[in-house]
Length: 273
Length: 241
Image (cartoon, rainbow over all chains, first blue to last red; front, side, top):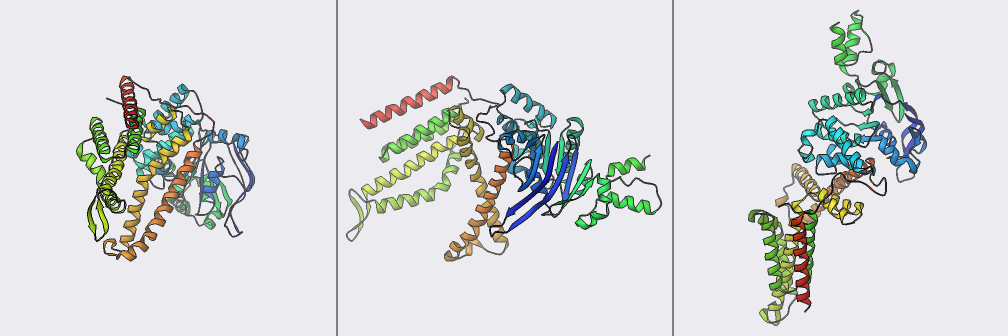
């Protein structure tokens, strides 16, 4: 479990002033959840993501990962072995010249026996569908494959939590769908807790839980259906995905339809009943 | 024949050491020819070698001229009034400097025959701390990125209507500020993002780390190492004598 208790994060501005990126945030993320986090630019999404694995420390408050405090240097590396991060630009997070070694980099840092390193690398490469590219250079991969490689590199460390900070923003439509399918499979089959930060409402609509950040605070928190239909959603300046709009239209025409329907798949399933 | 990266690194060290030790054009020319011969053995063709040296040619020529004029000695071959311009000593020094650089550059080409990961593994297996070896490899990785960023910024400037080839020299120097700052800034930003990614993957989490792959010496490596060391030692002894 990840527990964020009354966390505030300020950034100094160099003239004695401070910018508050997160303001008294309380949040609990249970194991196995698929959480989407959205918000406008400057709402604190990236700051929140980096607090989760100790890359940033809170100015006040506490972040606990499976009971370990991220501010405690003794457990910081244990936390980083639990909470993996994938960033926006895949090229800026690829370190090694061969796919296999890129996946192995994080595991090697954990000082595990060689046999265990090899086992994890084999498992993760198979899981992420990169077997064909195992001995190739990462720059030969497509954008979507590079992001899958970044996920593989994080998972090989034995992460039980995976934080993805706008991983699809540099990908085309097909690669985005491919990555979302991969993430849902990780949640469903491997029981990985996925925390997805995105500007795409269609993507976060597929999460189990949606959090909206607004000016450094949690403005809304619930299922995607609850959040998109909440009166406070409009105030955040974000735009709903098209399906909730369609649901509203059908309701106005008198059709009986579940307001929790937020994705195309859910709509198709409803219409085919 | 697949030679271990460590064997190649040793050859580079030997060639570089000899280049620093030798000071006559004849010795350095022979060393340069030996370096070229080694490149042919490691399957570089003449076109690749020529292409590699082409960017250096103007620098080498500039150095040759500067050394010839400003390091006079020996017989005056060309003078202006009482001022020696070209001397035999100057020519010899210039040739030595240029050939020394050429030998080191040729030796460095051998480092292109293996990737940064093997470079790190080789240094680590030679008991160099991983962080140091990793730092060197990452630095080498950023050299082409620096060049790519420069191209991006030059393109951006040209798209704003600045014809770089037609800009007067005085303005060109001022324009360098507009080029250097964004290139350095963007490269540093990329480096910062990479540092965050590396840290997120547990870099330096523990004092020791394991490796999925280790380099191994085979008979060819022992032969190359023995030959390199024995030849270098013999040449050093001969030079000292």
